[in-house]
Length: 405
Image (cartoon, rainbow, N blue to C red; front, side, top):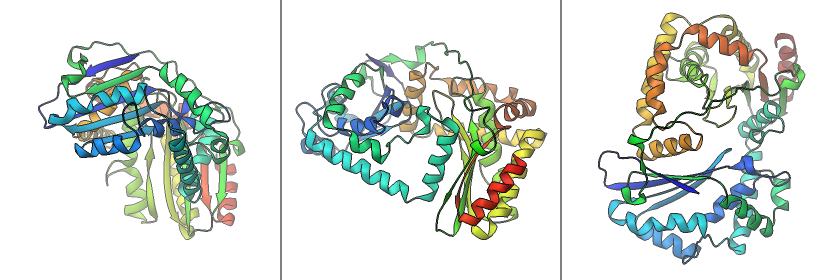
């Protein structure tokens, strides 16, 4: 079933349609990790009346864009063109999701492309560190695995598997949103939808210190660290306090991470917070990379910061500034129509009101430092750490981890 929505934005000279198919890599069956990534790529490589080359030429001849991406809990397909061409291109959406060609020749190309991506990721110590972190945090949960799958599983996926997966795909809920009334959808301005209630749950909360640690040796001159845990879904009332905490830690040059690791000591190459929108328990982690000579000192600073989040509430000035920066980020996210439509259709698929950003904005002032402290104690008392670096440094940090966490 395809649910249609219309967002009546101020007049623009282009139109965008974003589709969200409920179920992404979380629908990958055991032993077939990466199959939905392959299927998603195949969908846009030809449909009824248009083989791969004809489809590409037709879209490009109208100066349009067709993009697709697989997430852990959904598949996104978007089409964008000038208003004058949109009515000609819109029927492609229905053909792509309902009548794709799914060519066996194209399947072999996409499968090889997945292999190449997996190999490339294996050579990136940052991605490898993150993948290791996800595995110890989520164990056998779908969020533990990369959306592109793994080499062993992808090698076993055959053409018949793709055809079978497409039968599953056809039964999934699908949502489309556009700023063009051609889709004849329900107007979001008149939509009154109640949020679904979320029952929070923690997985792996009883693991001991060693089970919450992973290290990988690399031959580079930098050490990568990631510390955090799974938290709550986008539907949860705990979502907003976590966004305030993320703002405090990582938004702008006034952020705690920047002031400690860059401004005061100048020891990091890269640092930040990763806390994406998810329908299930989303990850919340602090990541950073430093030179090997600064690795142990950086771990001491990171440990101190983490413990401070567990013991002390944010000061009045800190939480006021964090809230203002978060409000600013909401405004920034509303500057791109593509991002607005993508976000709203994703929320609708989660059963969340599409105007929830306005709701969140109105509730920011109600968040207190004690609310955030309560959440850090609940979710961060037993964090998970993944590091990648020199073997000796990893061993030393492992010993420090056992003592401190």
